[in-house]
Amino acid sequence: MTGHPVPADRGPALVDLLDRLLAGGVVIAGDLTLRIADVDLVRIDLHALISSVDAIVPSPWEAGT
Image 1: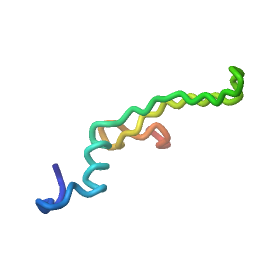
Image 2 (image 1 turned 30 degrees about the vertical axis):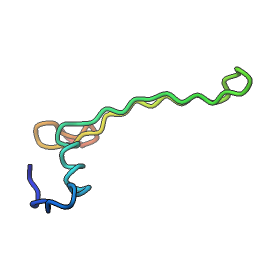
Image 3 (image 1 turned 60 degrees about the horizontal axis):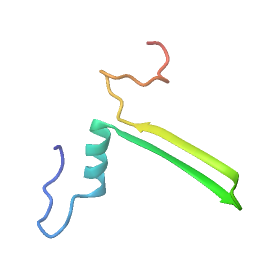
Image 4 (image 1 turned 180 degrees about the vertical axis):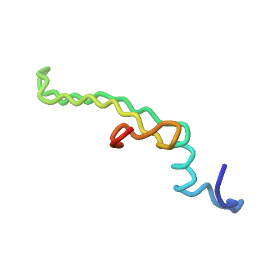
């Protein structure tokens, strides 16, 4: 882990947690349906991959390469 030492009485900082999550990547998936009287009014499907980008895995939006 690349970070500062954490005092014994406190948990890891939010920045350290985000660093760990982005280093390995996070997949978020979920479905939300709003129903009234068994009639689907709104449906939201969420599928997301959150990861860091570096030289080995370049950004898909980077122009040129």
